[in-house]
Structures are given as C-alpha cells and as structure tokens.
Length: 144
Image (cartoon, rainbow, N blue to C red; front, side, top):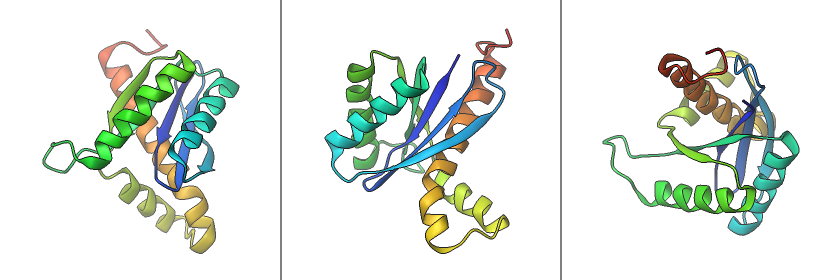
C-alpha cells in the first residue's frame, strides 16, 4: 500500500512516502505554506499526485499523553485532509520526531538553510517509519 506521512507545521509541512512494498520511507518534499486551508489543499494535491492509499498525520501529544492545542490543530488538519482526498487518514503519535530529525541532521552535519529546508521531511520519514514498524508487528503490512 502506498502510504504518505505528514508532519504538519504552521509554516512548513513535511511529506514522506513509502511504496507498495512498505519497506522504506522516503522524504518527498516540504510544503512551505502558512495558510491552514491552502496547506491542506497542497497536501491533498501531493497525496493525489503520489497516489496515496492511506495518509498518516503526525499527532503531537504532550509528553504526558494529553492532547493540547497543537494536537487539536492536527486533528482538524487530518479531518479536512480526509474529506479532500477521500483517503483514510490516521493520526500517529509523533512525540520527539522533530528532535530525532535534528539529531539525524547533526550526524550528517546538515546546517543552516539546508537543515531548515529538510527537517520537516525528515520528521515525516520518522513518523512513517514508526507507522510501518507498527503495521509489520501487527500483521497488517503488505508483506502479510
């Protein structure tokens, strides 16, 4: 199944995808858009372009597991994205993914403007890898 992951942000939204084999998540792009409605439209357009069959949106719960303002905004984003694409959209716990993305970029010595341009796509890859691992363990991946 082609699965697209989204790391939604107020200014930049990272996109990652995996192919039908569900073996590897790859960064696709970062959508630079501050307008909420426009960001949803551009994300839906990318999902259609990639022929996504499922979309996973990062769900930034608080560290104690509660749902805050940011997570609520992601819920709204996911609901609107589902309406526009007609595709199933799942919220996926993304606590610490941006921190992990920065750590990966430190290892590759990616700095400055280049880091800013890719960190959200790397975070989307981390979200998708986590989701793919869940699918594999739960027996719902393409391999089964």
